[in-house]
Amino acid sequence: MRRLGPPSLLCAAFLLSACRSHPTEPPPTPAPAPESSAASTPGYIRFTGLSLSLLEPVPPERCRWVRLGLEGVRAELFTFDGACERAELAWSHDGSKGAVLLSPHSEAPERAWVVDFASGQGVELALPRPGDTTDLGFDAEGHPIALVSPGMPQEPTQPAVARAFLHDGEGWRLLESKETAYEGEGAGSHVLDATRMLGPTTTLLGPEALPVTREVERGSMDMAALGNAVPSKRSGDNGEWGVAPTASGPLFSWKTYAEEPTSCMPLRWYEGAKLAEPERLALPADACFQLYVRDDVLLVSSAGSARVYDLKQHKRLASADKVLKTRFWPGPRLGPTARTSPP
Image (cartoon, rainbow, N blue to C red):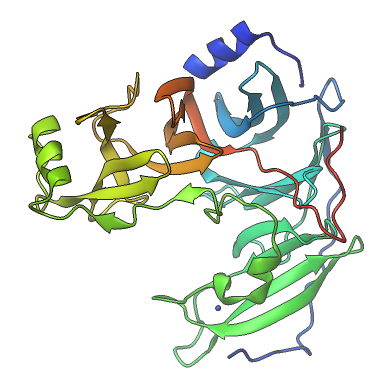
């Protein structure tokens, strides 16, 4: 269901890569299964400012895809069966539609849907190789593309082959195949050129992800300041202090040796000459997160919470709890084959 919400509703919601081609390989036969699920109130909601994409768990085991605008607009885009933790999201280049890829779990099969944002319609899509799809996204024309991992070898000498399939409206056809590795560096389906064809997707961090690029040098003024601010955290003790530079100053976080993403609590930035925690961060002491930056706005996205900050003013703009996979809502990628987003 979609609905417009006043600013008070937003507040309430927030608190809560030499390749070998195999052109003769026969493509799989399944076609999409048109099993629709519609929003009760179709219609495109206008977002005039910065907005977020997030997933909200719906008990007992359903998940709702939501778009939240910082100016007070909320759109409930699509609700599907399955846990939010198992879902990855994708957007078309023009921003008019999205996709949900739900990984298999226990007795629950892998599933996928294509969602039209303007109409509120979600159509289930039969996948080319059920159980082995690692990414689902769109090419520039808006056709679904599925990246398929090699899976486990039936024989030790069997080469690992990653494949990409394109859905042209009639069914899936083989787009690309390359030899890869079953495990280790360079393994899996991201060796495929088709990866670079995809629009935004939560399986790839994207250009707005802010990496922790280096460790804080021992003996530096920054390390001394961190020691004063967080005396319980010392580099070498199951982790290191890392720094992510921004146009408004450095962000310091704890880099553990076992966690992904590698940015974990504590999170600190300079307030004058001293280091302080961002305003009302309120994340658990063991929380890990990914940082994203757009237009001097910082998003701290953890498994369960999201915080949004003005980097220049060091002010909290928004907060969300009991949410997953929070990202900035992508803008349309305009080009010769891309269309503008619906009004």
